[in-house]
Image (cartoon, rainbow, N blue to C red):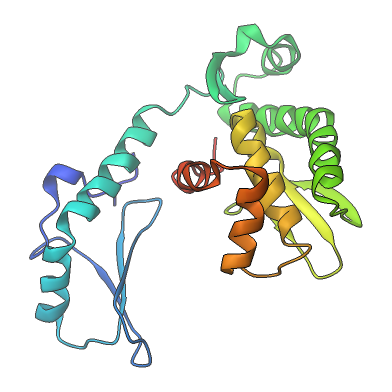
Length: 222
């Protein structure tokens, strides 16, 4: 677990370290928990005691987010023995194509390369048909579909209609994959996250709010 991760039971709104980003033009104060457990505060306030009072008010929410982060670290698969695949943690012995690659190496660095290649191969096999299904259903057709390993986003859609999908999506359940696909296709009509955009996503995925919350809690990492 990263050294900077503040355990939820250890968080103290008065004394725990925080990273303050002063934004005088902001109207509100925003709190974010980084993937390494750093508490980042973007605020127009200059007085740290005022910022600490806000942290006290949001203490329950902060501890909840830190606990989610701890649990995600605890459940992290053992590299070389397990893998997150299609919403489950599986033994690599259940996946012959991956196992053959891993057996050639002993280094965890090589294991990572094997995993990323496995995810890419599976994404190319699995995702195009799901994109085609929802593209027909929504009558929204991308000009091109690309598959890449992205470090922070699950997907993107540019103004030229090119949809890029993160190959790490193969870690997710089929329902979560479908949410990302519909989300990016919806950007072909709405290049924003307006109410109209979310209404369009919800039209094709009624559980979109729940799925969006699930996906936000998952990082595209091994």
